[in-house]
Length: 215
Image (cartoon, rainbow, N blue to C red):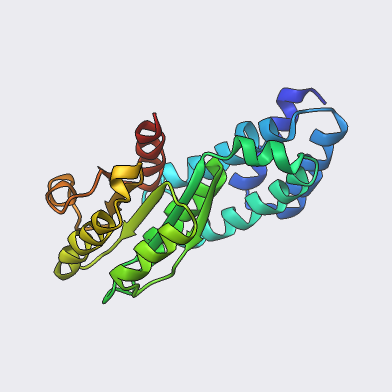
């Protein structure tokens, strides 16, 4: 089996929600001498991204959750063959993510989390109903590069501004920390009015925006 066929098998295993095939293909990639990071990014990740790209069109949240399990089943085998220092060096950065206080809708947050992790970010997941202070405390504690704010209730818009103001008190943005906000009712206009550095309509676009901000 060629390298291209193995990479495609990894991708298809995620699209087919087939954990055993993902593990099998990961082992085949290692045996074939394919760079493990390449196998993750050009195989497993492409399958997960395709599902995220078609979320609510062809795929749904349960599909995303199962697909992410398949992704990690294959990725964990591949990661075991990567030197920890190299993996650390390849890391895109650290992001703190959570749903704001007063909101318990975390499906969108979870999708963003899955894709950021797949892209190579270390994610600190705070869950839902998270006080503004917690976002900032964890960002400082973990030397984060991003604070990712999720919400689905328009009444919670002021929480974005509260997090931004607390971050300013700690001089986080002045030191390069980027704050992104998103979720169903959050428009680009609202995100920027509240002081965020970035906004995205979908989880894949959130990853793209984050990578752009890193540049």
